[in-house]
Length: 429
Image 1 (cartoon, rainbow, N blue to C red):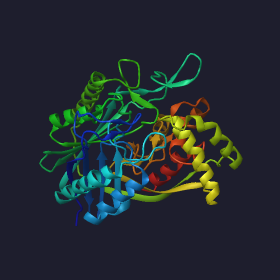
Image 2 (spheres, rainbow, N blue to C red; image 1 turned 180 degrees about the vertical axis):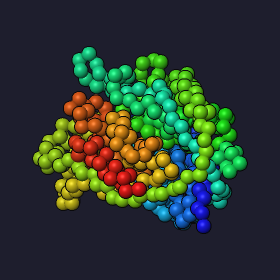
Image 3 (cartoon, helix red, strand yellow; image 1 turned 120 degrees about the horizontal axis):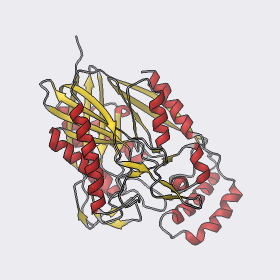
């Protein structure tokens, strides 16, 4: 029997009530809903192979929350937990869906009361509406983002715009249509921080929301946004910064929308594709912990800043946790992750449990045997920023904030390891 690719798509609302504390900068109470937050699920089936990609317009989803989402979706639909890909768009204007020392604790009331039930409902709806589909794919260049590791005259790194820094300009659009070519779903893959509106009290999907809405108006298909090389890439704002205001958000969103619609209109060929997943283990080594004596000394030194939101609290909490690791006697040398790579015809979706720098994504694409290698940032968990080795000596926010996630910091050559481990799985497809 000839196997046929089937797909279903559905969307649910995950907007929190006004007054909910927002994450992404210093915690602040929301004052208004500019646009609703959403969970969008695409279920794909090819013979006995079934998987789902979920795009959530939230901040980063941490490991524990991903496990709860996967368990709930698995119980409701039977989809293998390892084949449930949970992508957060990493907006900075939504509730805390991860614990980040110095910034916020995960909002479990929101996660368990609103987020998880809505995600499960979206996947169930998508799974119940499976139908045969054809797929078209196109890509083009976009200037929606720019490297944000600005180098000052004195040589330090600040958050801003660095026009000569590494940047991945490629935007990819995947269209799924029914057998009679009616629109069903779109996926847009592009990498840039959704920080264009800045630290307002608005609940919003930021610039991706504008792009999503416009593409849906033009094509009629429900659209999922998948963030790419986000680690050192910010929105290309006309104010020369990495954050702006409502007008800046509208400008960037319209630019992204124009590019996505342009690419979409170039897609003229739709065909049936096969579906395959590759599940394996990737090992992420840690740097050795600082010595116990150093941790005690640094804890005392950082005490004066322990109540300062952001890096002040993060630094103090980090040294507390290092001491706790020594006290427990269970020192770790690595983190082991189950990695699932999904192939749809010539397209491979590669999850990254953190925020990869642009150079990592560019290198992955260079050596991948597939025409469209889409690296999914902030997907299936959180390991913080994933920097390149040569960025570490300059420091800067992305390097310093590593202390906000764990007592353990990933190895200095984590870029090489991520590329090697993932390419091995890709080549096994």
